[in-house]
Length: 232
Image 1: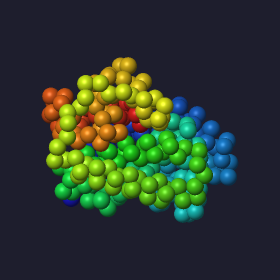
Image 2: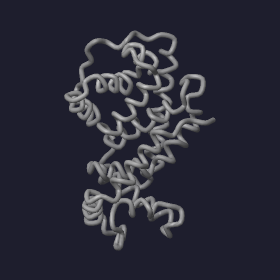
Image 3: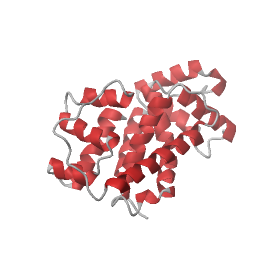
Image 4: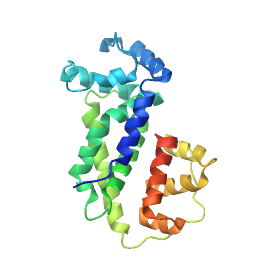
């Protein structure tokens, strides 16, 4: 099965820029101070930290697991959470592949991938601060369950869905993601409303595009860019 990788490329480009920034270097100092046991001496930024998780880094499996564990503990820090999301991307793609990218339910596999990334980002916000020795597998296991539930809901409503209501309340008390949506709504209420309907109401993209009087491809791209800019 093939699928477009636009959102993965966007995330990689975004991370390539952010991982070498001054913000990244400061985040590394905070991370190193909080977890001296990780022995990050000589690492310059968070890009270097993720480099330690690569297969040829020289770190053993247990050391890599401890880095992921520490990243989740410190995931209240936005840049550290972004680093954790970045290193989980291959696992997110694998999770989508296990569920066949929603084949038979979702027309475009890239839509399933986009939803999986958004669900994982929300999961990292909810689990931030938790101390899990098997953080990586635990996160991906939870993501698989959430993505499966989303696909089942999508299957249940795909035969018919009411158009998006004129007014959608963006409640700020339910989650950090909803708070960010509410803040984004001040500058872009249209996309914030559509993103809310897509993520929390499981509204099919086809129905949202029809209600918005836009094409599915255009709306998908707009929502991906909105998520990168405002939510991740």
